[in-house]
Length: 284
Ligand SMILES: C[S@@+](CC[C@H](N)C(=O)[O-])C[C@H]1O[C@@H](n2cnc3c(N)ncnc32)[C@H](O)[C@@H]1O
Image 1: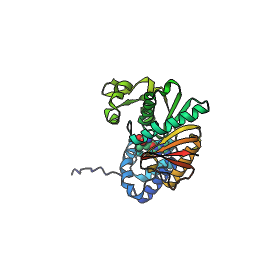
Image 2: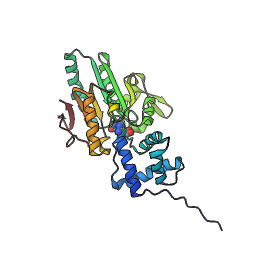
Image 3: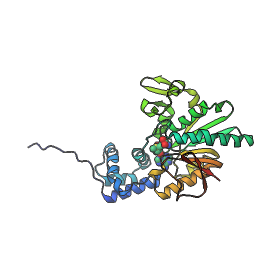
Image 4: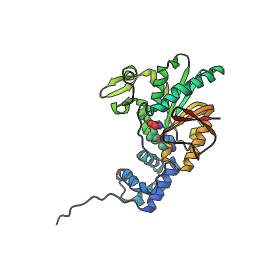
């Protein structure tokens, strides 16, 4: 008699959930609360399939002892991170950057005979955030008299590859002001590719925000954007990442967090500065 084989997806036990949650947390800062167990199970099902592993016991063993464990840890993090981003995300913050923060920094740096502006987009995903800043600074004509360096970084090397390619679908450009599309992009089949002027202002690097050895390579930044990533961290990792960003900022430099993120209960080392309806944090 023929029996129909019903493929069952591996089930994640509470013990393995805790093991994976802790591996992910110590590696990336991202923290899965108990109610996200099913989410983790569905996100990781594909990893098990690709490794031809039948159970989560096997997967935890693989991550602990296999010779390829380092490579798999990277794959694990890549498959659970949220990479959602877009050009000109959260206009109010960008207004604060353009109308408040940049003019203040220009005045200060000029007085010190310094004509450099150093900006770090520290969890930049596929690059829309650092390229938005580049377009804004080009539009302001700042590149004519200033040396602008924008660093885009992320924990996930895959999104950085895509950022370097700078080829975007219409959807991620939904907030891009219409005239900028023609001015800063060219058509590339169904996609739009960023032109050289903006491309040349941005460099990319893989940096894990909770790894001090990696963040240590970035110093004396005038502005850091760290938006929409700390919401996925637990408190201890948030404190660690913010400590690293503090060290990477120049004195008087500014930190932008996501619209729903705050330094409340994390650190008092920064001075909150209000620009209309946005709060930006200044290193004092
Ligand atoms: C939701 S995206 C935010 C992108 C952009 N900042 C924005 O607001 O549109 C979050 C990004 O944080 C990155 N990320 C997560 N943990 C990280 C870590 N420990 N270090 C650096 N980047 C991290 C993810 O890979 C992802 O690309």
